[in-house]
Length: 125
Image (tube, rainbow, N blue to C red; front, side, top):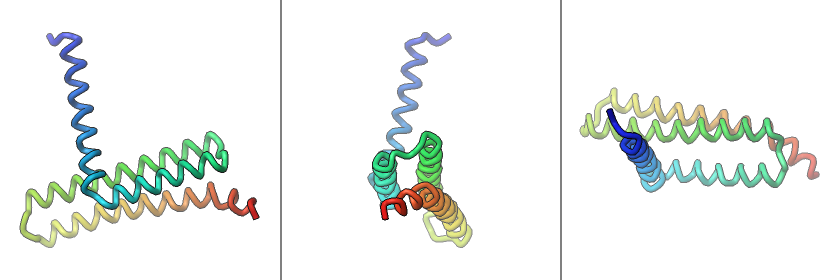
């Protein structure tokens, strides 16, 4: 039976792997950096417009949805590049599908952002 210390160490190592993955995505994927920049802008607008708790919850869920989709897209692309280094039509379709998933997530995020922020921007005029 593992000691409490060993269990904590295993969890810490697992979290380290997760952070390594996120660092890789930020360093190597321009779309991840774009999504993070937009995330920072949305959070700033949230504070500037004093959005409600429910609006914050919706934005946080939406941001998480988009960033998660982007990380999965990156993972699938890397896996396919490793497993099928030569171009293969099926690998291309799989990459297109995961990119499409990110596009759907981003479009949903944009609609939610418009629903939350558009009325607040209109009130400024």
